[in-house]
Image (cartoon, rainbow, N blue to C red):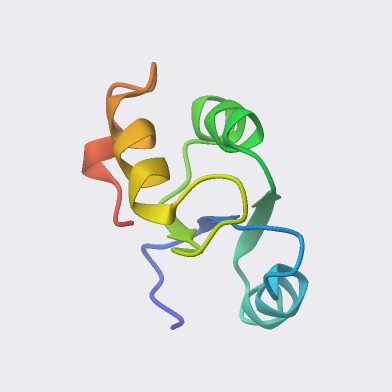
Length: 85
């Protein structure tokens, strides 16, 4: 996964999702990784940090991952569609 174009990665999942494990592995490869456990956190991080890649747990506990993806794509961050998700 060590694509030099991907510097910042957002991992959006529920607390049971192995985000910390993914974060550790990706950081060891030189990426900056942010974890979000709610839609509000994810949107705030997208707006502030402008991640190059967004990883979403498609089986979220409070909201289905596909619905979360649609919400992220329509969110205040107008260029979310330009990021790989």
